Length: 240
Ligand code: C5J
Image (cartoon, rainbow, N blue to C red; front, side, top):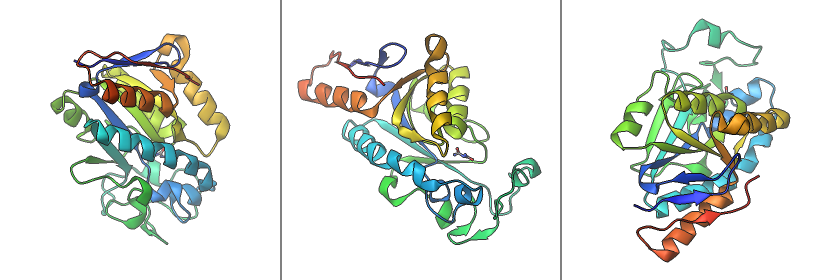
C-alpha cells in the first residue's frame, strides 16, 4: 500500500491513493460563465476563473495516477419536480432556476449552462453526479458510488467554497470521510467568505478537514510515481 503525506493545515494529511477520490464540485457554466445562475444573482463570475487552471492540473495528475475522480453538477429535472419552492423563490435573480437563459434553462440537467466548463470536461468513465441540493450526498448516488469504489478520503476542488464545497465537506465528515480541500482549486464570488470558509474547515484541529494548495498533492503524486516504491511515504510541503 502506498501511503502519501502532504503538508496541510492544521497538520499533515495522509492518504492512500487507492482509497482517495478527487471530487470536483459544480465547475459549471451556470456558475462560472456569463449568462448563468451565478450572474443572475448579481455575482461577478470572473472571480471563479482562477480555480480552473490548478483544477485542470490536478485532474491531469489524478488521471495519471489512476485515481478515482467524481464530478458533480448542481441541477434539476426538466419538470423541476426536485426543486423546492424555497429554492426557486430565494433571492432576487434576473432569471430563476428553470427559466430560459442565454445558455439554455438555468440549472436544468442536460442544458448547456448546467454542464461543466470546457476546460474541466470529464473524461469518458469518470462519474458525473447531478445533485439538486448544495451537498453532493443529498438525494444522489454519490455516497453509494464512493462506497462501491472503497473510497475513504476525498480531495476536494470546486465552487463555491462557502456553499456547495462547504456543504459537501460537512456532509462527508458526518459520514466518516477524511477531506482535504485544495485552497487554489476552490473559489467564491466573495473573497472574504472564501478565506474564512477555508479557515473554518481547518480550525479546531481540523473540525471539517484539512486545507492545502494543490501543489503539495501534485508534488507528492509526482514523487511517488518517480520512486515507484510500494511503501512510499512522501511529505510535500508548503501548506497555505
Ligand atoms: C451555489 C454552488 N452557490 N455550487 N452553488 O448556489 O456553490
